[in-house]
Image (cartoon, rainbow, N blue to C red; front, side, top):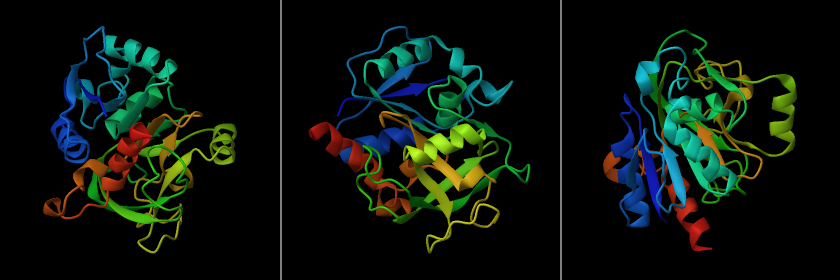
Length: 233
């Protein structure tokens, strides 16, 4: 799997993502600078977490207009795969590659904690390593992770099976109004979605931070193994 990781001013999770990708694929990903106007031959592009451009204006708003994002839009249209985590998810919504928006957390506080995610659709290149309804732990660290969308968009996401992760209790129970299990207040407890063709995924929690027992667990590893398997097939 040939992967690249985009680095913006303020990105701080690129090394974590590189460790995760290398540990699963056996190949070091390429680091891509936000001013790059050409892309190497890649299977997957990752937009990692951090605070691109200091999160001025809105989280991801300035990064959405970086030169590389024009190329990534072309990459998506050609059928390329993209994973956006945390700030990367925010950038994907700002570019309208994925629908909806990420607003301030419901409690108006920055959250840095573990959460549990329930897998809603296991038939995507990002989730095939889990079973439907499976629950895994993932760290989250964000101030603007409250996913919102209009009713029509939410209905379409549900009807097309594009909600892939929801915040849940460790038992798998989903309660959108419960801040203990849906800490940022996301609509319908949505933690991650995919594009209509399933090739672009955005999620707020950080699976890359749990890919090895030395990290405290390997709960997030199936996501990266799923991607490697998708390209092997």
